[in-house]
Image (cartoon, rainbow, N blue to C red):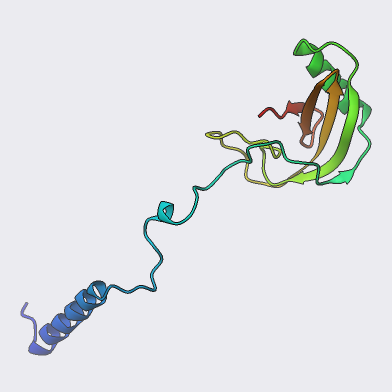
Length: 137
């Protein structure tokens, strides 16, 4: 099948336009090297997240699970409640993600409970259940 002169001319014009648009050095395009002008994307904060939710009472089942977890870690002494709050976490990391880990990408209603035993402070997170997650940084 042979191309008609009109089709050949249209093809040449389109090719010329494509090449011209690539060679103009358009400065309205964003920089293709994102590291050149902005810091790298962070997947987690360097420190535990400060309390941001509504103050809440710690249910007995959650408190008992937290005390049992401290005992399993070898922590002796009576935990003292520093703060407790209801929180909606942005994902399954419960606000305490670790680099290189993947988490459920859905909001999670939960709780943040901070306790002190002696001179050490422990930041615990709960999702929708009663299983505590110690937020360590």
